[in-house]
Length: 423
Image 1 (cartoon, one colour):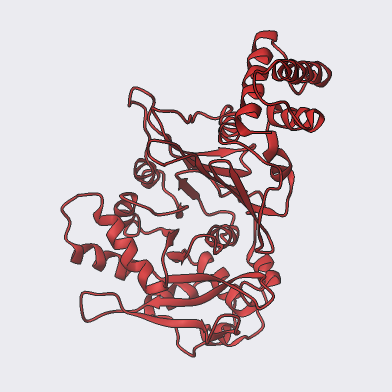
Image 2 (cartoon, one colour; image 1 turned 30 degrees about the vertical axis):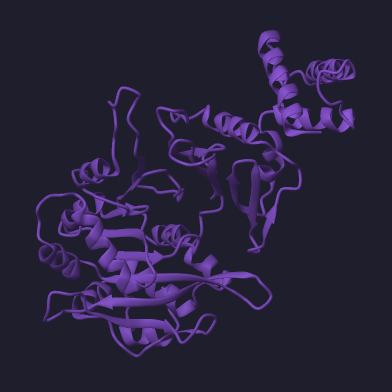
C-alpha cells in the first residue's frame, strides 16, 4: 500500500468522522463501521482503475482505527512507563527507554498522522501549533510530560520531542538508592538547603538536573516559603508554604504574554525563603542578580558541560536582558552570592545502560580577579568512580550558614568526612 493511498483513505475517514459527529472513544463500533466502509469504497474504486488496490485491507482497517483514535499510533508509547522520551521527525518515530536504549516504532506512521496526535495532545492546553505559532512548548497528559514541537517553515518537517517527567518527585534518599549521589553528599546537600544556600545545578540535556532540583526542594524545611518559576512546569514537589508558577506565551494578537523574567520579578515581591527557576535560559537570569542579593536562597538549573562553564553560561544569560550592566558587575554579584554548583553528567556503562551521576560539587570562593574562582568539595576521578570529598572545606560564608543548622556535636569536617548524622 502506498503512502498516498493510505493518506487518501485516512482523510476521507476523518471527514466522515467529523460530519457524522462520531466520538472515536465513545463509539468504537460506529468508528469501525465507518473505517471499514471507507476502505471498502477505496477498494471498489481501485478495481475500476482508480488507484492501486490494497494488498491487505484488514491490516489497513486496523491501522486506520489506531490512527484516528485519540492518541493514534503513539498511544501505546505514551502509556508505557519505561519510556523517557519520544522523538518525532516527520513520519519517523523513535523513543528512548529508561535503560538508555533507543528504538524505533515498528508501526508505520505518516507526518500528518503524527501532527494530528500532537494537536490532540495540545487541545486541553492554552498552546497551539499552527502557521502563526510554529514553535510550541506545553505540559501535556495531565502535566506528566512536556511537548516541544516545531513545524515548517521553521523546520523542514514536523520535529517534536515528548519528554515524560511523571516521576520527578525524587528525594536525596532516592537519588542515593539510584546511585546518582552517595550518602555523604546527600547529607551535605540536605543541610545546604536547610541553610538557604544558593545552588546551581548544571549538566547536559537529559542528565537529571530536574530530578536533582526536585530532591533539593524536598529537602527544604516545611516552614520555608518556596516560590518556583518555570517556562513549562516540570517540578511537582508538594510544598506546604509557597507555590509554582508557569510562564504564558502571547495570544494570537501578541498580548497577554507572561515571561519567565516577569515571574522571577513577581516572586521577589512575595517574601520567599527560596527562589527556584526550573531552567535558566535567558534574560530571567538578570533578575536572579537581584534575587541572590535579597537575602533568600536560590536554586536553578542550567545547561553546561561543567560546573565552571555553568557560571559563565549564567552570566551570558543575564547579559541577554540588555540592561547595560557590565559583565564585570554581573560576575561580581554571582561570585559573591552563589554558594555551590552541582554538576551532573550522563554516561553509558559497557552494557549500554545509561547512568546519571553527580560528577562534581564546587564551591565559589573569594577571588582576587574578575573571573570566578571555585574549589571542588566533591568530585569523581572518572565517570562511574566513587564521588569523594576532596578534603576542602566550604568558604567562610557557606560555613557560617551550615553551622547554624548542623545538629550539636556535628562539625562541617565531620559532615564531609562521613560522620554519622543524628537529627
